[in-house]
Image (cartoon, rainbow, N blue to C red; front, side):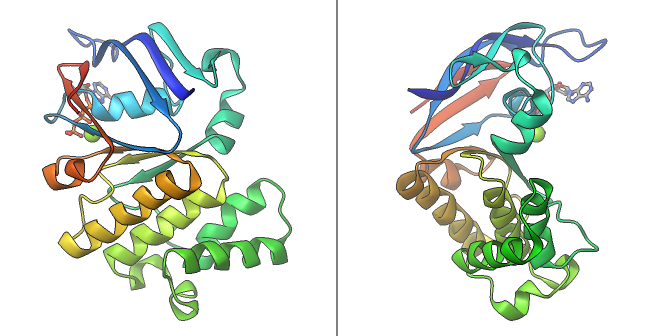
Length: 221
Ligand SMILES: Nc1ncnc2c1ncn2[C@@H]1O[C@H](COP(=O)(O)OP(=O)(O)OP(=O)(O)O)[C@@H](O)[C@H]1O
Ligand SMILES: [Mg+2]
């Protein structure tokens, strides 16, 4: 069954001449890594924002587990069911790598010592060393920062990961590492992972490819 789906979703920014997302219907399942490709301005990030409940559609519905998210507590939805990863990593600069991953755990009431233990485990799972965990984001490489961001996304417990150009600032080797991690989350841990990308080689490594053009989404593979 679909984890998350869109039914005839249309969304326009205020004052825009035409919709950024235009009557999009599609379903995303667990255990699958998706790519969304398409030109700049075609509506990819807007689509992710709608899936994340950051914006609500003007028309149509976003369904999570079959329920319209407009009827859910959206703060709870964003905190517990969806996690996001970005091109610019967006780690908290004044927190160490370890503290960045503890933060979402403590937010949901996990005690400090237990949060630290789980954060260490998650960081180790993306090959961040004990020494690197103590560093601030500015003192980590781009690839390391993105792996910390993935660990932080996993800490929330959400099984849907929305990633907007997660490899946009990475070289070929780090791109491969990040996609391998996301693919194994989908394959082995049943995550639903949706990756927006400009990189055809990244799209080639996913299970399903969607193309966005002028707000319209079509399945390519
Ligand atoms: N906050 C905003 N206010 C008004 N218009 C916006 C806003 N954000 C995006 N748009 C417009 O909506 C359309 C879709 O933008 P979106 O950011 O979803 O594209 P994108 O496919 O993610 O592009 P890129 O590949 O450059 O990131 C574009 O025409 C853009 O100019
Ligand atoms: Mg974008």
